[in-house]
Length: 307
Image (cartoon, rainbow, N blue to C red):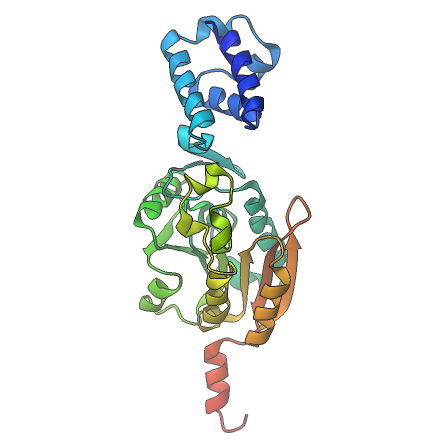
């Protein structure tokens, strides 16, 4: 069988198995020396370029995609996210296109802020970093800042370090749960911003997701507890101890959670400028806020007899 016979047969198989057909191109381009133009023009020379062993490998990987529902990103070990080519394994959640927007939202909020310099030169933390995607993008956008990234999975941190090294970014990675490693570093009231894409899917829904997600991606990066908000509540309540006055807080969430997260921030009483931001599809995907006063500021006020 030549390449085009194999390709056409598997385009049909993708449709029959409800797998996006563009994934076949994605796999071919990453496993061969071909480019998009070769595929678009259906060059007859392609058959000569692809050795039988290479075609056999493509067939093996695509069979795994169709039969075992393994995400194509895990099969190739990489994903394109923003302008980054990141290594991924089943130890990390595959970075989604909608998450890319969190960096653009952060950049816009900082540009509009009266304390932009404090952000550009400040300490940032990506909590639940996974592949390191957000941390690396932050490091590229804020080269004068100090970027920290935390994850509970040591395997995930290994992948994140590989990705950071690839782009030459000095990111301090920490193993632990949410703010715990930062407490040991005595970073209370010192963070310019807290950014996170935490687990936010209700526990009962995790097993109902697509098999690519349920059977292959780490549940620890998906399961947000009974209502999906366990970790977001933690981030809301713990962040004021670590942020500077005016510090930025921003998280990703799932559709339908925006008003609850807004309410959590309002009830906490430490936040102002609470905003909900939409993703590419118009879904309310992110919530941002600023810390009104840091804990250290409040403590100073309480100890001052003039206040």
